[in-house]
Length: 160
Ligand code: ZN
Image (cartoon, rainbow, N blue to C red; front, side, top):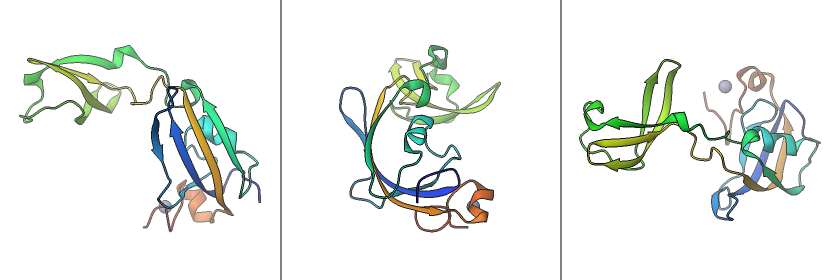
């Protein structure tokens, strides 16, 4: 069975950045299971997987445009400490939801200097060229309800 839209794929993967540091891996855990063709994983990886079957293993390089996007410097801003209402202990790495004109976006604190807090709304991997090593562990047809919901049910997926 070859991977195409509407199939449930189980994969093992290791993600490295351009410098070769491992950022994430499924090794030592169950394979990551997802519904293929519904944008549940980044586009560049999904594209590279088309037509693959159980037992296939491959490497793929994903450019930022097909990954977590390019960095947008406008998403990095300095905010006065007093604007973090009700939060006394702000630390680098903390994550918040920021209310913006375009709706809430996730931001994280990247620097603190006296009363100036720098936050970044870019995805942590924005602008990164990514390397994936992938092995396909399972492929099955999705249930109609999974297609309707756009995600996998059962082991490794949603339970509801
Ligand atoms: Zn569902």
